[in-house]
Length: 340
Length: 157
Image (cartoon, rainbow over all chains, first blue to last red; front, side):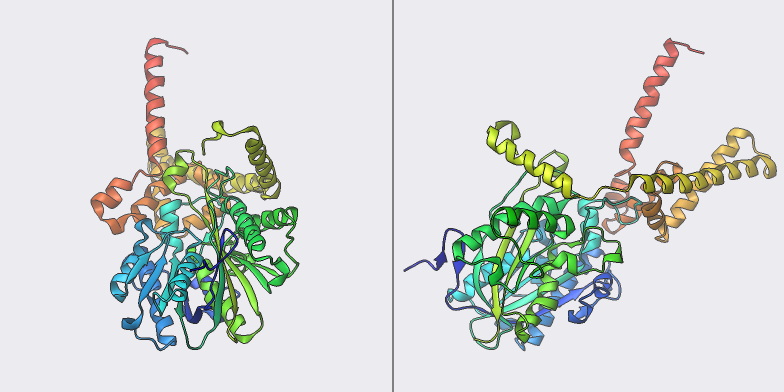
């Protein structure tokens, strides 16, 4: 049996798995952002009626999954796998949501790259005929991430200009073998962990950018495509610093990103004046923007083909404090518009 | 990353990238930060002095009791502002202006107390209370003990 591959790093999906539906739930600050209209639910407050922010993150993850299934008119009993993760230790938000949803569950951790990771693995399951439908989801919460990676919420400190703001949000996509589609998944490039020695946990854009460059270049090499073959090359949460580095390094590598064809979810989820410094970050950033702003445009035919690449900084506070550098990762999937 | 084991070429790559990052990463606005810290921090100190003066003038406190009164009042005000979610906004503006006076210490104690309450009084608030202020206390107290011992043997003045 031939491998469904293009080159060393890219998977080709001959059956073009479909993203049947998607949903996004975000926090109040995200709900005031430029993509306000695209979200299925904007929380009135970050606690979402729960006892703790961790519980709120779990409820939000679950809500995104349930809304996605409802939009697709798919009873959860028929979903054959849930693939997803978040930023909490032991990916608890996803695990607790999976407990409530009672769907066979594979928990994933790829830091902020989790949405692309789940789409890749979900597409493999669907395309290979092992499961359909499959629910892919990812989420993050500003208040839990602050506590885990930085300081208590009410602690008064200043952020550096390169710091990013973790998105409170969750996004879910339902992948199916047949039926209507917002978009098709046609290719996936699994990223390598790349670490160019960045230690500053407040500059995650710089830590992730080399991985983004590596995955993009390998994708273009494997598929023989160029950045201009995509209506948008979309990165997850490189933020201002990471995006600037990406542009410079891609030009150096001979794949300059065309003006106006590049988008970073982290740079587009908040308004500039929202005091978020270099932009948004977190699993929920690319997951919610995928559902709110990318898939609708593919469905409308505004974009025909995009490269969606979620980027992750694989750091833990412990290894950071021990002086370890920050490994970066980026996974890319090619999404094509719904019409065959 | 075990940088010492890297070959020369790989070190060159890291160095080149570090330079690129340094060039493209925006710098903190030092002048603006200093000015804000100066005026907010200055106001807090003026408030502290005013409280101490009020203590001696109106409450007939001794000078050392009055400075204690000023500190306690500032700590209380900070804890209150932290509790109602305002202090972090002031601190985001003022930076060192709120961190350096006793307000910084009060905030560093109050904010973990609030943050870790969902994990319970013992393993949450109790265990994590000194998460931020702990190092300052450990090394501050240690340093004062060392200075005290030195002072015992070498009486300067």
